[in-house]
Image (cartoon, helix red, strand yellow):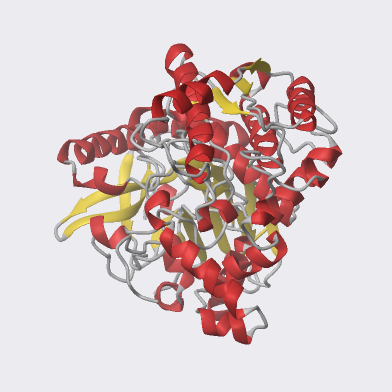
Length: 557
């Protein structure tokens, strides 16, 4: 037995809640080195990072690239060398083995790769597609670190009892779980319940280290935690930010069991706070990680664009957000006033560009072929597309990415215009139902979240929240002229989307059959539109895009 393997009764473990960028192997490796430096300064023996933190999660088809895997292996070797005279590191990386490529957690210690443990359960549902690119590993056995038997489970392995049971059977003393667990509303309690179940089954303490940050549609909320063998929460890191949580572990002389001393326990967010923070972090990382100088959006004076503007300013700062009011002859005076008030409160650059001349030009261009037809939705869509052209022109000329502002209720039923208000590179509200938009606006008027770059206090007038929603594409238009009230619409949509219910079940739940049938029909007809929509922050358990995958050509009724 070497000196470093001699039994000990005290262990300091740093939970490194990090925000890696997919594909930035050098940058992620540098981030891990900084974590090792902080750990050494804090007196930690071991650093635990999130799942696949060396390459970023999820790497998707990058795993097929041999050069990518070569670079990962080079970076792992270099990181291992960095542990020769300092803390050890558990790092996540794709790793080549005899049977294929595994989603691995590697223990780097004393300048070497001491152990490799592969993820056993590969998720293949919702946003996850790991069976496409990874080979499942065998049931893992513990790894030895300073004489302590660490049972490493990678993310999904915690959601099943067999991996933890096998580790316990082979002598594990502490369960260590690197994670890349995307945010969903109310998911925190689900994670905690699974963790407590594993502790209850094994009577072992548990370390859960989650990633933080945005990756395309996904946003990771962090909130890493430690649970002792008595089920007590011994520590929880902050949500929505990179964070180090140092935990001090001692071994009971009497019982021979390990537990962590009480560490910092950050409080969980309520529902509105979590939704708002997810939008902010997802927008910030999408813009910054993709190298955009800022964003531009249409500010209509309505609630959706007001919320999108507030989120953008909180994410990026006022100097990186530009808003444009594009009035038509149907734009109300209160919309002009409200848009100006929002822009002034947020402190953003603000332009007014009248689309009336564009409408007149299209009327002239099309009057011959439209002769004898009624004015209707075609002309309304032309207005929306004229606004889309203006925003894209400003984006092309000055560089900011267009932010679209449609909510999930609208995206569900197709109450949006292709190549018009659906234009954009990203949509923070894409998975937020209309009633949650109202709630998020009220919440932001009363709270400024941690890390937000926007102003203190109210960010939008009360009238923006209280007035009836309207696209203002024709005189006196209201959303409810075309749709059920949002209290009914959102409830039906949650039943059809998140709960996967059918029309008959919803009617049995008490909804009007004709209304449910209408919403169901609109939901299916709009599939082709959603396929062409920009990505947006995943909030619910059934987001459009990566999760809801229905055929466009579809006669199922």
